[in-house]
Image 1 (cartoon, rainbow, N blue to C red):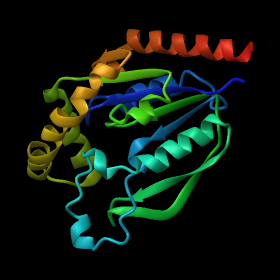
Image 2 (image 1 turned 135 degrees about the vertical axis):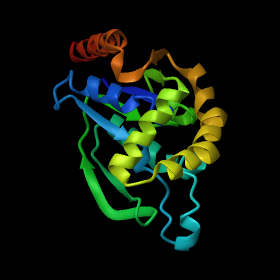
Image 3 (image 1 turned 45 degrees about the vertical axis):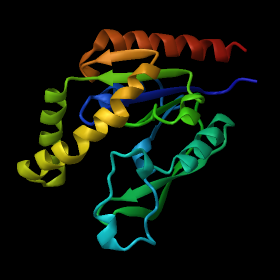
Length: 210
């Protein structure tokens, strides 16, 4: 019995993993591919006082509800639809809304800690780590957070130094060793992306011929 192909794409904040994911997604028909972002699966904190939610470390493995994430991946592997949760960052907890996701032949799992949990890795056919120098990542993060989230340079740098960087070194960087493919410089690496797309297409063609 055929099953969807699962690609995990990990990398630090600002590494370009979302650009890599988008580049792959655009190479395939929407009928054949879906993206499941790990940061939709932060834990539900509705029963925690709001003041405590403000201290949430979103770069730590314990911030994620991997049990639900894994359950949903397994359902998609069985060609079952899921209701993807939505996270409300203004309230620092899960929203009451969900997003209907229909099963597809290609599933991309994208997130900073996608490769950290062995249970998730075991569901993947291809594991990718997007490896970008720290100075590029912090510049991208500063530009993104100022433009999209209305934050100040000082607040972005303070968070990077106190949380993002130590979490990257402790939890994210070590997962590079699990990757089948390491892509330097993210979405700018057209050669690596083309090679990955070719490999995925080969597997999809083999599935369709079963």
